[in-house]
Image 1 (tube, rainbow, N blue to C red):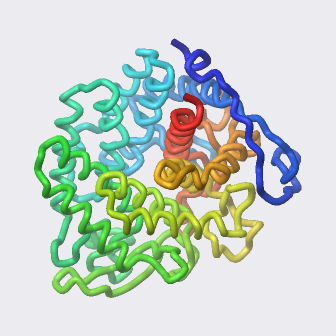
Image 2: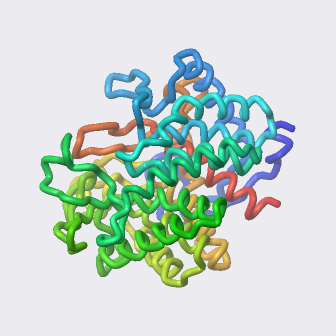
Length: 404
């Protein structure tokens, strides 16, 4: 079965956003048709080309450098390394074509040994988004065993006094220069799904208990009165007291770094999925309201920080839009489709030529115009493998929910 057979229905979307000036955006009064089938066919062609190059190099694509060259994931460890095989698993799910299963297995095998790494908090990103999808789609017990080992490693970073998993070590690099002792970033909410799943796999509640403690502590300390989130909260590891509320990737400590808001939204939606704790659903809805009501975005695509000084002359962050769209689709399942129009606005924009690359361009990444970290002068206005990953996840979630 190919993508076209599996995804045959066009999605008709009426946009509710304000008029735009560019010719390839959609205005308030227009009706746009997204052919999800065609979008996924396009994505498959791009990733097939990218996979061929990646396999010839035995590496994982991450982004494009400032001088236009492919930037591969660091082979000793890279927090983004799980997204590329994750995208391949999504295409296997969409097409039922065994070649994508083979490709995904080959890609994730490149970093399997990182399951033992205890010096990084991103094991959830890495292993849930690769081996996790592989286990879900194939039932391969070896993949489950990898996830269990990764969860064991991740759990070693939990401090019960703080009630959180430590994000960054502070004994080296730029983190050591900040004066932090126990930094926890909002991104870390995304690593909790691995722990929830492994508690289900093993029957051992400790992993779920760690995830819940982390979610509760973050809920208490990371959010402002307007439901925006700080990027970094630094704790005293001996007392659990909050020392600083900072940013590392936003424009200022009190600004709302855009992708950080998306991580929080996604994280609390998934926490509600596994616990049914209404506090998590309430927080997810509050974050969604904050994001949706932001004026500093165009057709659902935000700039890299909602408080960036030179909007609209600031880079977009398409990755934040993709994470948001996927998270809102999950939230729709708990809220009687309250965010369907918002999701459709984002997906409509992403499918335009402003944000979708032509086949064979963009080093065969699907989407353009994402941002890694402007304060670090890294990955500015480039494609990112995790933007493509969450875009594919959003498209498949949309299809499952609305095109049965």
